[in-house]
Length: 123
Image (cartoon, rainbow, N blue to C red; front, top):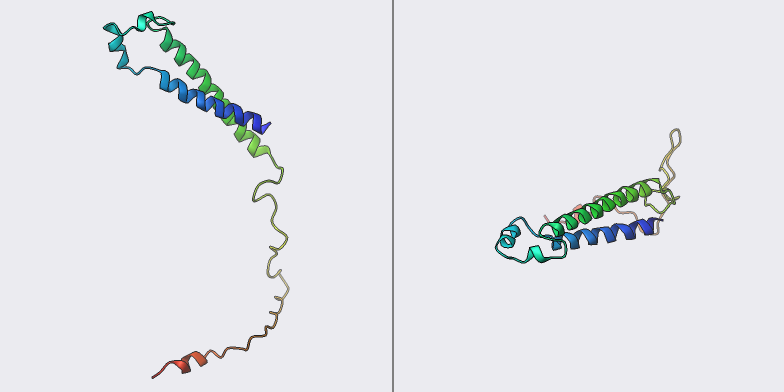
């Protein structure tokens, strides 16, 4: 379901981009007043502007609805796909109240004397 909503969301976004690029700016009306040929278009002198603006409004409404649907779907999806869905088992607290910490395991490396580095520095 999320994939279907996402497809409509992307299609609505691309439609809005295309329709905005097709629309004329406010300054383009002056060119039509001097014989720009807009009156002979398919939708009439102002018909294309109204048609494109209405279709853009519908595409914007679809984009808004799909945005809200994706937000709702992601907030209610508890499929365990998220990073914070469940903490890993290895992340246990170091100590619990009332107990002592576990001893540090011994290593094969010799113990380092803290004063040994001070002896290496020439005077």
